[in-house]
Image 1 (cartoon, rainbow, N blue to C red):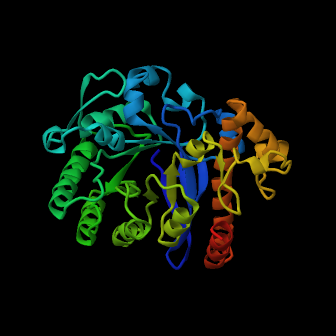
Image 2 (image 1 turned 135 degrees about the vertical axis):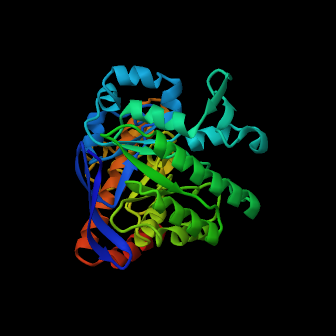
Image 3 (image 1 turned 60 degrees about the vertical axis):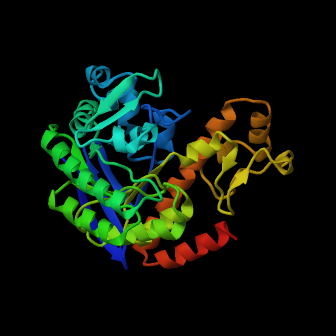
Length: 369
């Protein structure tokens, strides 16, 4: 079946809802861990479930190259291949592809995008149709339209040309889409331009996707610009469909997105910073390599209920990093993912009790003191 979204309650623009999928029903707003290569780095599916994970992401571009969509299809689809029984969203591969482009004017064509593999340097060509066909074979719950991620800064002329092309690509991808058990999301672009964001949102909604993503944010712009990008687009998205802000994982950005009406977020941040000894805590981000934690036998966050905080101290985790033991990255990945998921649980509770604004203010005051 296609996914279904139920709006339960609004608090100003912030939304409390439910997302019904083939692999369960989950509350929103939610944070989605990223499993680029059919694996959330260092963690097992069982550990993700214990952390409260619902939807996770995998990457179309990377799985296209390794092991290939046909291998995943033969395994019974992405869920069986990676042994994850929750919902999965596959991104379109656009962000990765455009980071590999050498000459935008030459390599981005109306038909698709020319680029070189990051693995072996061979020439590749990805079209909207091919991106969708790959995702259909991966058999995720949610597939994403193929779009161009507009860099920041970009001229108005470039952003307009790119936005219009993304809309044409969205139509082509929707026409190529062929999986009754999968839902397709459209992506709103427009760069840092208010009129282009509005235009992209309105035209994308006309195509009637199962959900809508706000793309092209968190690409080097300042916070105010990013929040404006969301504001300029989200007011034109339907209330009965899920709204997804791509590539955002900083606590402040999650709260600002929720306040503006976003339902779904994803980011590699919690596992990426974990591999560098950084941990989220309610009192701000910390680095466990810091010498002050050498004899600190308290948990990473005393109010956290994750496996790591229940069983290990800052001193032990610091020792693992200093000694070069990979368990340190695993333990912090478990903690960081659980931290953001628990934060979302607390957000949803605040929405139920009409206290989101109070929750946001207190969280920010403590975290960014």
